[in-house]
Image (cartoon, rainbow, N blue to C red; front, top):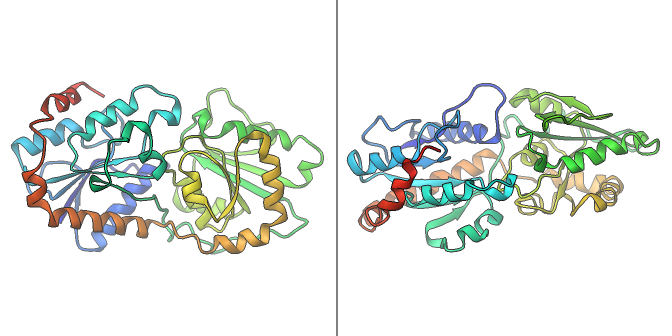
Length: 342
């Protein structure tokens, strides 16, 4: 089959969506399928819409491009919409509406987390035309090779990383950890490293700050640590904790968004800043237990990409039925709203 992915690959450090595209492309190619990043060919079997906001740097296929392709080039192409965003993530106001409008062109919808699918905006989306597929990290890069376990008496090295510098990525927690490092007692127990971009005018006092890293450099840095912490709020379906977990780091994670679904059974959960220190002490006291559990963490990119490939194949097997019952003409007025630049 020929798959068109709606995001072009950006070289160098970029967000988790970029690593998703790389992983899916590589897996499909390895399994004998063709992958393109535009709609120039007239024999595309699957279009994977990854983001309807055409002005974003890495977006290569917009909703209006798909609409034109279905109407005038190849009506037999199947369109799958991968949703990994929401307004709840960054307190924005327009993302959900953009996603709803774009979704009218889709034959099937993939959500990157059950929490995302359960949002009120998607309450009418049935299980028949939607699927939850969790993200996965590249285990050929993010793995336990050369990762050193913590030995009691040493500083427990905490780490996190984010491409986005939005405050809701968990900077209330990261600031709290930074404050703990100014305390004489805690400074003898823990060390904290933040990798990635920061909110405007935000600076750490004691924590180690590293600018964004990519792939092997990132994995190498993660493996120097013992616990992966994430305080992100309303995350739709993140991949950063997967990269830390696959590197052998037990998870200290917030009870928010997709994190309980991704992290349950592989670390200690906290609800807010008030609970954080208790959860930190818990993971310190039970580090050996959680370190043994994390070795079975399996949210890797091959597992994720296999689920995508299986879904693509299933949709193609039902192509005649899907095309016959497609509501593109009924939804045309709504689809035309996608002509408004995003």
